[in-house]
Length: 350
Image (cartoon, rainbow, N blue to C red; front, side, top):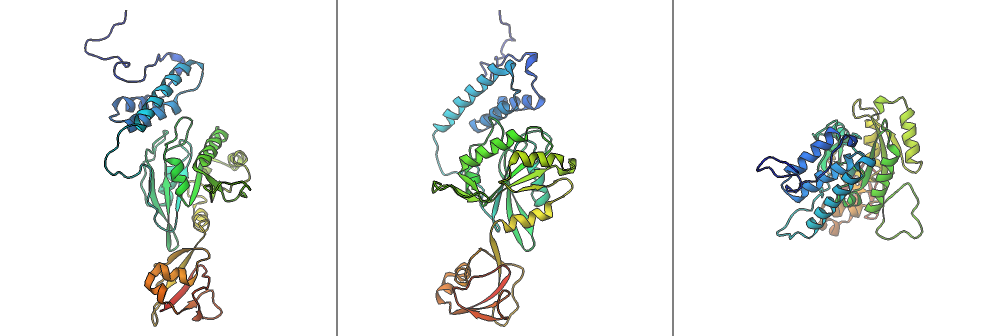
């Protein structure tokens, strides 16, 4: 006979995952927190997020096989319901982050790798930083200063077994570059690297340090992919070497520390230069150049490209330009096809 208090629904009746939680499960406090969020969830999105956390946090052994199967069944049902739910009105795409500044880098990594801490250390953003997994629930942008420009960094929810937000591949595909953040002191670096490589494949992102295969499809996006070995303050170099080995030699590796700031100043410069951008300063005739607000253009940009960036009509009427910086002499006259270099000063004449 099954006894329960009058008026109290069982977990099965309440629409919650039903488990026989015996002592062999060894469920963590973080798992129970996620389960409580599932119970309190008011919509599909919250339920899906909580269920994915529960799957990722559930210890994987023989004693939890039935629980894992039950969770995955419930997740599949909710995903199917969400996919076929009617949608009315215009809504901003979930996970979309508007690009700002000189370029956009997306941070991806496993739980507790320190992505949020790095975002806080490099930008003026104030993400929630916790010692428990899945503190970040939605993408959070911040602006990193480098000399006279700003670069956008985007923190994202953790990538783990059974827990990858569906918008992450699109976010990585549309970004200018991807930062894979690892905790060098973690003992599961190899599996984390495997999950991140799978995510890059789903995002159709190809690391720029690798030659494109001859049969590469047109939708494959070559772009900079860097590895940040975080928590270097806890390492004498041994853990970083092991993490680098797990990553492989085909991806650039940078040991950093969000706590001490080690490696972050070098990283700022790397992140700007890997974007393949140049800064060009405008100058009006008879006046000093405006060195506070550079125009940011792709490498290989010409005088004409700059003129288009300033104003379409100026580009149409452009006769010539004068150049300071990478010129044979100050004020050199150049035509619209002249290729610009970083920190050039340009005076347009229409």
